[in-house]
Length: 233
Image (tube, rainbow, N blue to C red; front, side, top):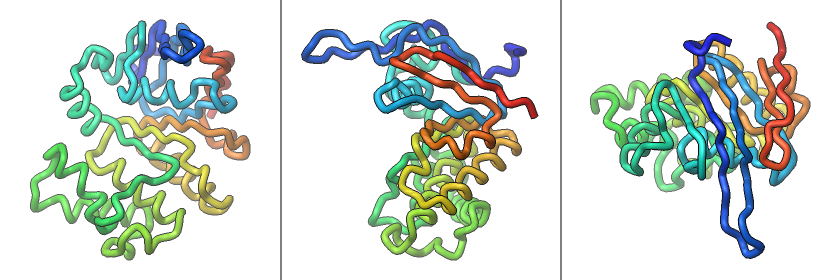
């Protein structure tokens, strides 16, 4: 793999936590590279380290040891304030439980990251948010509150919000875990389309029925990357 094409690089990453029994290693000497524009699944049993790996990639967790290089930036060396600014502009995060703010409309939820990072002129933000809601096919829900939307619609809104600052990397932690099969497939297809448009998309999932959609699958067991399956296009 051409290193110039790598947007995500982990080298010797270990993440340890102190628990009642002593030291628990959630990740053990993980080294991997992800190419620009790849659609990647991270799979493994509950407790295997999937979410910790995702949190290290996004900078939510710092490794106990090792290096995390994201789009040329050593994120493990950034301060909390630097990390917040970097993440806001470079990484879009989609959660299993949507995490839309209930007191804001869908449109306001999508505008929020732009307000936080000041990435677009104030006059442009509403139009950009509407365009993103159009992209995920829920523009007609813009003025509603999250509670008025179905689970599938809320997840589409969460994806639009994750795209607000045009990040190069999109990560999702079990994004279809609370959706029915039809909505889950539609969300995964949306991620596929975003990858084809140049976004690097990394999804933690346990749902094997979507495996054919991914270009590459990274399987993790007890904090160790055990196998990688790459689907040739």
